[in-house]
Length: 407
Image (cartoon, rainbow, N blue to C red):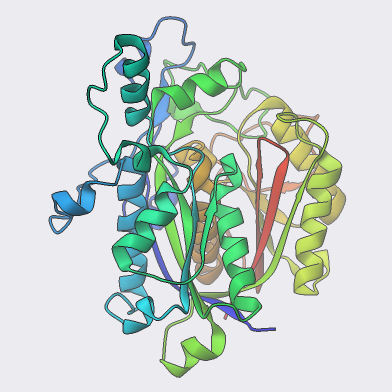
């Protein structure tokens, strides 16, 4: 089996549109959540909170022809991937078109705008604004396909549309593609654009925060006073590479992926199962040939929902006890859905390499129903560790766990 390392990273987030600026913002202990007038205007919607990206400009070299097949989610995915390939010193490398480079990428949904165009046709009985690229912008594989098209890759294409595990599952499957020898390099990650329809999905489940007048105080994962999640947006890309290939070209290596586990609950489509969540973490540890005490930090999914936080924390306690420090970045940027697994993987790697781990923002009083864990609260913590785990869980009972090793 081949070893798999991370040689490039790029992201777009509400904390910043590059890895360094977003990581630096974690030290400020302020979230990016806002109350949006556009959400207030929607009758029947309980929340008006979101964490949108800021100051993102489409690069000037993205001409009309390039953008024709891209909705906002694909634009973010391609830009994040371009930045990651630059970081890996691979942007103009002929290897991209060799067939040895693939793409594994996902989102919960494509772009919502063109869906309205199709719906208007049903209402007006006119084709109207529908174009030859309308479907391309909304199809489940839109991010992966647009990345492949833009960089002209000809290797494997692995689209992931598994809600909140879209990014992490894509990274895991990319890892397996290289580990097995099928590919030398994979462009992997996830993206999500903000749209009011996504807010409505969770609002109808009474799972959104309604602290509309105090956006800086929510979401508050694992806190006894938490009242739900906040929708965010962004994109994140990791360049995964076979170790010997990376070593031969003198690439800088951020981390090695040593463990990946994924499974499904098989019980309920929206209610998490703590037993299968725990089993997923154990699968990742088995893949890495590690015992729980080797993990120095667990990056939790931590959505801020009542049932999700309880199930996840109890699952984590059953595997690690209360000795392993843990936190989530969702208090900073909300729930970025298909992007969260990739964003949190990058931040986990950055925290590991800088020996500093961010707290769970707004966690002040741990819910007694949650697992008894070593929650990082208030301020960041200096920790030196060789291994970190990043866990994500999604609608459909889809669980993922990734383990990164410091190089």
